[in-house]
Every structure is written in structure tokens, then in C-alpha cells.
Amino acid sequence: MSKSKELAKNTIVMLIGKIFTQFLSFFLLPLYTRYLPTEEYGTADLILTYITLLTPVITVQQEMATFRYLVDARKDEKQKAKIIATSLESTLLRLLIFVAPVFVASFFINSSYISIVLLAGIFVSLSHLFLQIARGLGDNKKYTLGSVIAGVITLASNLILICLLHFGGKSILVSMALGNLGCALYLFLTLKIPTYLKAAPSDNKLKKSMLKYSWPLVPNGISWWLINASDRTIVSAFLGVAANGIYAVATKIPSIISGFLGIFTLSWTESASLHINDPDRDEFFSSVARNIVKIFSSLSILVIAVMPFVFDIIIGSDYREAYNYIPIAILGVFFNCMVSVYSAIYVAKKLTKKVAMTSFLSAVINIVVDLGLIHFIGLYAAVVSTAIAFLVMTIYRHFDVKKYVKIKYKSADLILAILGFAVITFLYYLSGTIAHLTALLLAIVLSITLNRPLLTKLSHKLTSTLKRN
Image (cartoon, rainbow, N blue to C red; front, side, top):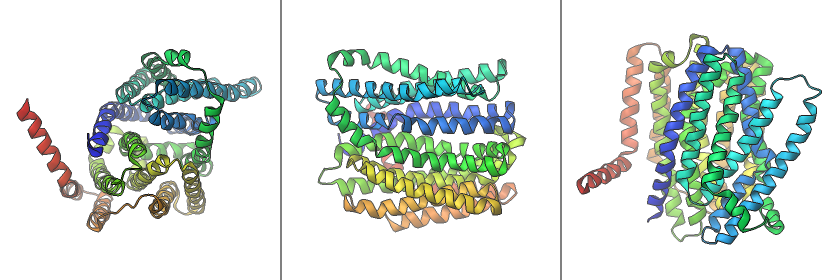
């Protein structure tokens, strides 16, 4: 199987599950906006952000080291068992170190959120570890099904807790904990983790080697936390938690794109790690990067063009202000797509210190711009600062990775994508059905034009498959 087909196959397998879970996540947004006040949703979203982004810091990114080491050990059963046993032992130990002081503090701090945060942190950490074990073993189907299980449980829990029991904003956090618990239990059993634990004990030498790989990713995790959580923290501090509720909705829409990006990044990181030393790597990596520009720029402008027609349907009137910030938030997600292309190269070369350094630089830029602008342009500062931070990181990484892989783009594709985004965003902010229909038509035409070679190839493949059947 060629490298491109291998990448496409892995992406499609995980995309199937992601489409399902993304639909569930998208379905939850109108549920939140209909049943939860902006203040309550803003508070829950802020806590959820802290849990999601601090978890990799608590685990010292052990799950990423597990994936990378398992990729190199797929044909060695004993080594696989040793890696899994070492990773699980290290993760449990770090969780214990995290849980103990928080548990003690709960006796002195009067907060109903502490116990929920503890459970969510533990279950998220374990589900992330088992998901990365599935990826490292090359079992993307179980990875996908585990993600689907988490999504279904999260949806069901939210419906019951919010609509029937009226549990309020805490429902989001409890549902997150239950969803990750279900995912962790499923993978623990189907991946036969106990069998691996019996086959080989943990290895201290391996533990040190994996820690050497993973610890530079901790500053990277902190940097991502600063980029994502700092916006919410600054908005909540200067504009109030209600404004953070608006910001949460504005960034939830672009999560459609980042959701697909997440799935591609998983399969792309695996392919990059497997083929980083191939003689034709420059051609292969350049081809992937060019397709990323075309696919995700098309997806970005299509989401912007569709929003005027669906926003009022899926979002409540209390959150109408979020409409203004969506295109800029989507621009930030697109630059994040480009960052992910280069991140896979660093991971493949095991240059985790480079990942940490560039992410930290981006985080500093994000905070400085956000604080500098929030008094002048209000909530726009949060989305603008994120877009600028990811743009700077994209430019820096593009030139830095040339030391290892020479990635080349086509100028025509870049110019077309930039012009398309500018025109469709301009039409987005105009009132009137004609302007919005024009934007939608232009977005469709532009997307087809940019992706014509890929669409032609897919069409031929589909036709060939139908004829064989």
C-alpha cells in the first residue's frame, strides 16, 4: 500500500467515528444555549477548558510517548507489553500525585466542583492513554469506536442531566467524566490491557527514555493551555463570564473544522513517524501539506458561507453576538491546521523540544495581543489574538522544518485560498439574503476548483469500485 493510500485509509477509518461524534457535539450546542444561561455555560466552559488542557500536563504527556514508542515496536510483542505496562504505571502514579493534594484541599475549600474535576481529570487521563495505545498498536478501528462510545455517553448524560434533572452547568462536566470512563473501560477490555501487563513488567530504563521524550511536551501542553484558556480567563476577568459564554459559542462553531483536523492529525502523525526517513519524503510531505491547504481552506469558507442560514436555527437569541466572531475564529483554526502539519514532522524526528519552544512563543504572543487589545475591541481581542498566534507559529515552523523536510506549496493555491476567504468573509458581514447566497455559491465553486484533482481521483475510485461490485 502506498504512503498516500495508507494515510487516506487511516484518516477515513477515524473520520467515520469523528463525523458521528462531531454530530453529537454539534447537537449539544443548541441544548446548552437553550437550557443554560450565558453565565452558567461560561463558567462550565471555563472549567472544562482547564480540565482538558491541564490533563496532558498532569500526565507529563505520557500518552504521546506511548504512541510514538509503540509505533516503533509493532512487530515486537515483548517490547509492546513493556511499553504499555511502563506507561500505565507512570500514569497512575502521576494521577495519584495530582489527586492526593486536591482531595485534601477539598476539606478546606467549599466548592461543589472539586469532586467532579477530580473524576473528570482521572477518567480523561486514562481514556487518552488507552486511545493512544490503540493508535500505537495500529488498531484505529478500536480508537474510533472508543471515541464514539465516549460521544454517545456524553450526549445521553447531558440530555438526562440538563433536560430531565435540571442539573445545570455541572452536567457538562459530569457527562464528560462519564463519557471518558466508558471509553477507558471499553479500550481496557478490548485491547486486552491486562494481558500486556502480565506479559512484561514495567521497565525503569524505558521509563526514563519515554520521560526524556515526553517532558519537553509539557511546556508545549502549558503553551496550548495558555493559548486556549488564557483567552477565556482574560475574557471572564475583563468582560465577565457571560461574555465567555458568547466566546465559547463563537469558538464552538469552528470546532467542526478542528474536529476533522484532529482526526487527520492523528493519522498524519502516524504516517509521518513511519516514513520520515524515506528517500521520497520531501515529495510526500509536500503533497500532504498542499492538500491540507486546499481541503481546510475550502472547509473554512464553506462553514462561513453556511453560517448565515443556520445560526439562528442552532443557536439561541441570547448568544446572537457570537455570530460576529465566527470568521476570525475560523481563520485561527485554519492556521492551527498548518501548525499541525509541521508538528507531525517534529514528532516524527522526536524533536519535542522544538514543539515546546515554538508553542511557548505562540502562547506569549497570544496573551500579549489579547491583553493589549481587549480594552479597545472587546471580545474581538480573544479571536484576533489566537489567529495571530497561530499565524506566527505557522510561519516560524515552516522555515524551521526546512532543516529536516523541504515542503513546497503552489502559489496559485495560496492566492486563491486567501482571496476566497477575504471575499466570502466580506459578504458574511453584509446583511441580506442575496449577499449570503452569493457567498455560498462562491464558496462551493472555489472549493471544487481548489480540490478538483482530488475530487476527480475520488470519483474515478468510486466509479471503479461500483463497476467491480
